Image (tube, rainbow, N blue to C red; front, side, top):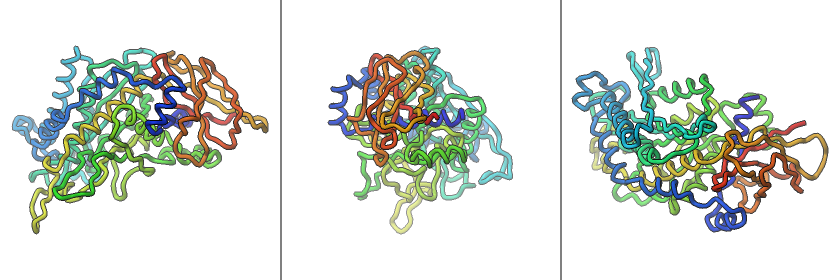
Length: 467
Ligand SMILES: [Zn+2]
């Protein structure tokens, strides 16, 4: 039941996803959300030049396969996965020095022994992470994660000697996590933000799987994961099909971790389009309209592309809300390929095919989303929809938002056939823990969210039916 409640708290995160003009109108009627100057400042700080420098540095390690060299001599020569992770760590530590030690930098290390998929020899896998602890003790337990994977591969999984530049897959995502750490560490947020570079992704999500399993075992309150993988905005010369104003956001529908009882509830209440991950995707779209106008998340209602997977799925499998950001159109000649020219076609995942301005926009979107989530109050707790009587009104009850940041609450609703929350369907109900609406619960999906004195909104919570 605890799992179910955790899951339900995420149901209505996407309440804010509305066209800009309508959002403006709603702001006028509900007093918020205004732009937060701190979030706007962090977004403005994102630098395409810094993103470019990070990607080129990662490529300089020649081959970042998780199976590649990690011995001291190779690290000293700047070659292999070991040198790459030492550099990522040194970057996090450098940002931390600039904020009086505000980042806690850690390595999570473990060894995988054969037999294991695509791992032919005992291999150490190391995740590199930095934590910006929330400043409010009552809210610091809430965690939001941004990730990329710093390992790479070429045409052959076992080839650790030829170049595996991985500029797009996934130095781009690693650069996004680094840039978010750099710009957000200059600010303070009530809740906690974690920046992670995973390893072992190309062999089968080894690094993220271990992290997510440990997080679940430790009962960490991870409320959202933004995984960035192939966000380079590939720009092959002559290609006219890339859309540099769009980034795809993949999210699961029915949660991977749902129990048979939870699936039964989803079926009974018509919540197939309301997973926690789907709500996070909708939230991102609203943040884009607020803070990165002109850059549009294109939501895709499936966990990932055909034949592919990513580190967000490790979190989904442990019951956490997580999604994947990927460029609009991929060029498979520039992924998982030995750099070479064949019949006039250039292969290889090289920096010259990366659009650094595009990666910077993805970083802006991530930074604004993380900052919005970490600034907002915790969602209201114990949200319920009493269903004891046959009636045409609907009453919702809840407990105050844990952490005491909330100063009022809003009830939202949408037709069961709509994927988005209509912007006009919001009622501010004050600083209360119960509301009755002249609207039948049989016809709509309800949500309740907490709002603070500055207009930061929590994720909304879909009520559990209560008999
Ligand atoms: Zn990848």
